[in-house]
Amino acid sequence: VVPFSRTTGIPRTDPADELRHAVEELGLKGLKIHPLIQGFKIDDPGLVPLMTAAAELDIPVLLHTGPNMGAAGRSVNGKVELIEDLALMCPNTTIIAGHADPLDVATAYMAASMPNVYLEPSIAWPRRHEILPKLARQTIATAGASKVLYGTDYSIDRDQRIIDINSMLDDCELSAED
Image (cartoon, rainbow, N blue to C red; front, side):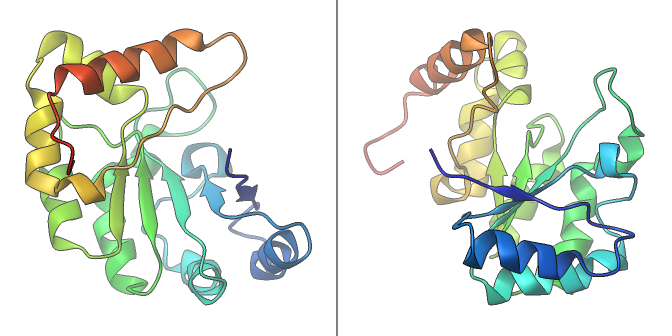
């Protein structure tokens, strides 16, 4: 278990101070930002100071991508392709695209071409795998196995998420190097 911090992001006056406290005083190892719920787009230039602070603290930033799935917020704020602009604005920050949808062809190519972008496959990948069994393997091959991180987005009473992602990865027939 790797604890991640969460800050309110934009428009707080200085969420970077909150992040520094979480990392330096509480020992947290990363930052999760949920643009749909927090009310801004992934590529908002207002994130640059926070992303820069994360880079200085040498922690990754996981951004929730994808639709709002009935929760509060606007799906447009979490479009995975917006990560590309943020990655260009913050080249020293490790960025993890949470729930990065493998049906978006640009996702794998973005991870392959952006040295600071990684994909986290929970939720979307197992669902797509049921329909297109080879899609996850193709996405991993395109992005590179080192650019795909194991993630579950596990929450209480959600054991099926872990079962589904493990099954999908087993079906991908990954090599030992992958």
